[in-house]
Image (cartoon, rainbow, N blue to C red; front, side, top):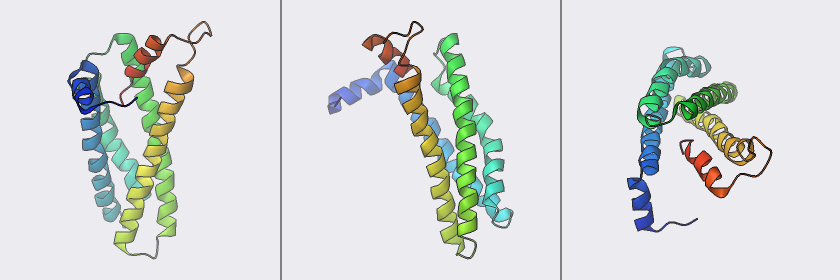
Length: 169
């Protein structure tokens, strides 16, 4: 569905639009902070970016969760909040795992390269790992998991829209 500029502006002013902007703001803050932290910790650990990835996740996952809880999910019902929390933690753990595994591979491939090449490769590995999990999260949850209702019937279009809006974009 294409939206005109005025339609986009109207959406941004809606409750759902503001929620999506808050979600974007949380992501725009935590992704670069995480990558900077990985670079700093990785250099302090003599180029061990795999350990830096795990340490960074340990430092930032809880603040990221609380930022989502108090900024993005603040008007979410109790039932939907439980779903948001479970989805957040599953996606966070899968994202950290995949990003760290890719970072481990990149470390092995860039051992004899310059620090700049190694740093850029680590960032690409991290963003790829988290990106894959993010895409799968939305494909699985929106297109497969929530497609069928409790009775095994196809939900009404309004029901699908409601489910879709329960998850931050």
